[in-house]
Length: 399
Image 1 (tube, helix red, strand yellow):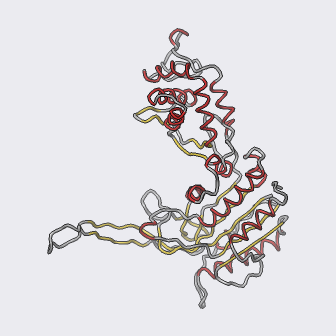
Image 2 (cartoon, helix red, strand yellow):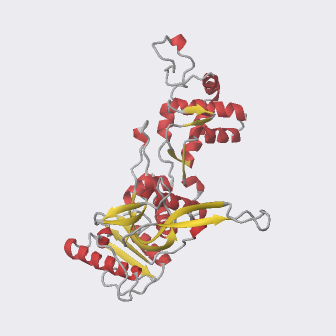
Image 3 (cartoon, rainbow, N blue to C red):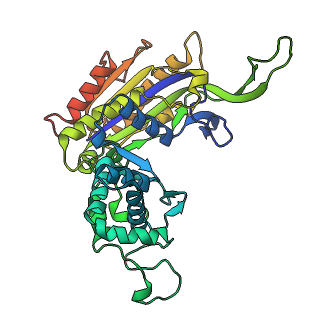
């Protein structure tokens, strides 16, 4: 069973997701320049919404970090270990797992790790369980040696006597076994890749598309701003700061799909948690807004239409409804014409390919556009979410 969500959302002037030059992200689609918000930006906003609105309990959330050693150290201290000893043991344990970790003032892994809260807890438990052995390894770390499974960090062939302290027997395998996703909702949704531990990768249950504007972007605009020193002497002319930043305004098509069976598998068969995660994701995807330059623009514009389907067939994006850019015309707004374009294109898809094993569809909108194909009217976002989740989990379990 697959849930798909389609959203049209018109933002006032803003710079929600910028590139390396500070400009709003763009792309070419249908031969025209379009505004864009990246998939990863949306996922970050969704994960933040989970926490801000307390939609998912903390034990079922994940952390994305390079600072695993610092977090392990904090948890070891909470178990009664001295702070300095805990940090050295944490660094040694992380270096054992990921030998390329660097210790330049702040011990970091070579890449971001996406780990569930319970995975980090169990990692700390494994270190604590082998505390005496890790105390010896901590000395090796302090001496700038890189511990491994019987491997020395020094170059060249060494005898066993020269290899130095060894990682406690079975530690790396034990950690590998405990890295099972930890029933973390956001990890189960978006998956992870661990380059050094491919057996612990998690296939994402959710796919999130880059947002594309339904309208073409002619050019970005620049805001020329000045600031004045409040304490400057009276009569002193001129600004004390001058600058510019770039913005645009666009109506975005947003799309995501969620494989309910894969989500339940990632959550170790916990159907209740899968249902709760699905409900939280739909709510967050609708309401969460990226935070870029929001203090300057406050572009808190809710979606104009939300359309959800629950189907057994493969996923279908409706982005091609906007291959030809939409523009206001004849008294109809950009948003109204975008809704009409999506409604018409969905009808074409269904007529040509069928409904893909449709179990449920639900729609709600702000604009009052007459819809021929996007059904059924839920009246509110809350009911739309409930209807979709009830259809995907008819008896509490995923279909």
